Amino acid sequence: MEELKKETKKVNDLVEYSLMYKISGQRDIDDHALLRYLKDKESQENAIRNQSENSRSFLQKKIKGAVMDEKVKLIEQGFASGDLEKQKACAEMIWYITQVDMKIILEEKLFRLIEQNFATGNPEAQRVYAEMIKYVSKYRTSQLIDQCFATFYLELQRICAKMIEYS
Image 1 (cartoon, rainbow, N blue to C red):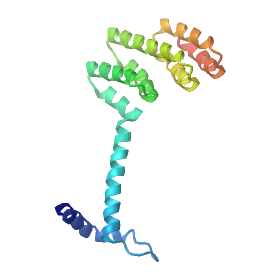
Image 2 (image 1 turned 135 degrees about the horizontal axis):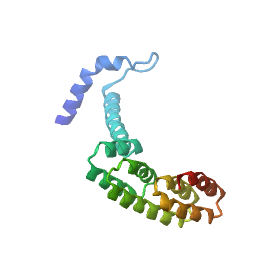
Image 3 (image 1 turned 60 degrees about the horizontal axis):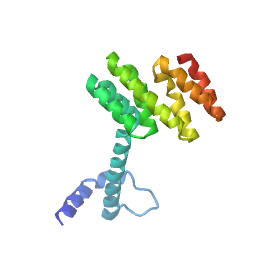
Image 4 (image 1 turned 90 degrees about the horizontal axis):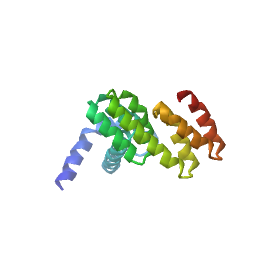
């Protein structure tokens, strides 16, 4: 009951605000409609916030702003997530790792990830993983490119042909 009073107070405070949404020829905005709008607005804002926090750009920004150990941990978590977009974003972030030994470890993990997923048979996933070949160490790219050309998926072979310049 107390929550309803708080919401009603919010509604009363927003009466002037709601006038700008008044459409001529339509009924006035009542308390119920405004309360429903406020409830939906909150859930939609939460959905947008959750979506943005799980986005590729948010992850990349988080990795760029982290200290070195945290960067490595975030990239490893991204690889383990199973989400193609996160994995691709984390692969791009390997270039931001300045410690050589950590960079080598992450490049090796990426190599294993790409190698495993080439065997899945999912052409769309294989295409995304083929685009990640450029982030693997130079001495490993040729192995992955060879695996690409061993498939019968023409689009995958085209992408791998473009990756030759990174080997």
